[in-house]
Each structure stands twice: as structure tokens, then as C-alpha cells.
Image (tube, rainbow, N blue to C red; front, side):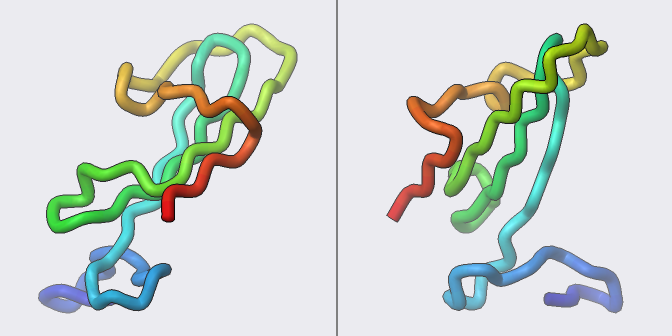
Length: 75
């Protein structure tokens, strides 16, 4: 989806609201998130991948909410 000629996000759900995809790193892994809602403040999906190496953290606390499994998709 475009806004003023720039990419605003991708509408993954089909509700006309663009979703934002982010990835950041904690000390030992990668956090992949898909955000939705009116202001993209609702986390729709979170996936954590353990990388088995020490890394410099780039995540905020809201990025690092762990799910019980590898994939946690809200309905």
C-alpha cells in the first residue's frame, strides 16, 4: 500500500490497513514481528529464532515478547 508515493506497508489481512513488518535482535536470537491495527501498535505475529551466538541487542521490550512456540499468530 502506498501513501504519498511511498510504501506504507503491506495489507496482509485484507482489511485495507497496512501491516508493518519488523525484525530486531536480542543477545542470542532474532525477533520477527508483524504489527497491525489502526496505528500498527497491535502485534499480530511474533517469531523468535535462536541463533546460538552472542549478538548486540537492537530490540525494545515490546519487540521481545516471547511466544510459547516459534509462531504465535493472533486471530
